[in-house]
Image (cartoon, rainbow, N blue to C red):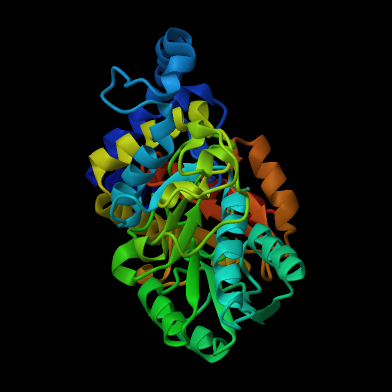
Length: 419
Ligand SMILES: *Cc1c(COP(=O)(O)O)cnc(C)c1O
């Protein structure tokens, strides 16, 4: 069967195919193959209407009273949005019970707050090392460097192969009695390697330390079970697979058993136990709300709500099934068209060991994949380039068709073939 027929067959049999029509595909008519939904998800059709309704009815209609008055939509005022939306993300995305997740800030800022909270707590017990891996996303590594300098802590780096990911055995070998915190990405941003969440969490706990998961490339793509893993802390983005839009606020998870014990350092009035008391002296909210610092980005939560609504309707298990089928198909096409030209696959072959994206490396193809990516963009095929020589094919399950994957890889094939 030709690859074109295979793609058509897979699309015809795809139980989630109809959800593609829920996205504003027509807004980008020149983009024939969007392979970067893992970096910035497409907007849902419901989002412009939801934003318009928010501006008119909520902001325009309720003005300052919107913060505290009950909304017609049956939820609390905007003051409750960070924890209400956090609870929904917990339930639909993270496998987390209520009262442990909050929406605020950016992933970088929430990551800083959680690292500081965990480290400050552990320093009091004589633990002064943070374990991390060299292939984690830059912002995580940079924040860790800053916190280590600020607090006099030591960073212990695990060298990870950028074509693979972090293993429980590597973690077990690196943690010890001085470890305060260990932090990793669940899905590696380059290779797509899917870390063993429960096993790594257990390895960190065996050393008496806390674990902080970065779920930016997992949330909305891979099923998560933070409570069942016994995870301590987690952060992640909402503008990737949750389609919250550029700069959408992030989420943070703080397991209930740490409430009142771990304390984040950016003490603002919105994380105070009683924000409107406006009295002297900071007293943190006893729950997850203490992770908030200043006024939460309410308008920016509107698109996130639409994304979580859609995911709740579809269910993460169905999303994961399609995600695996998409990455498998991308690898099948790559093996047939690109590997013979020297391109190599940097993503684990075992479906259970990878997340929702696939990275192809220039290898011996003789191409500069940075230039190749720029050329693909001009042709309406939009993957992204990741150093040193990778083209990352992000496959957002709800908005990507098998035909779209094939179109993009055929365009890459034409370039590679003519080198
Ligand atoms: C995308 C991503 C981020 C982004 O952080 P921002 O603060 O939203 O810029 C952080 N960590 C990981 C692992 C990511 O993939």
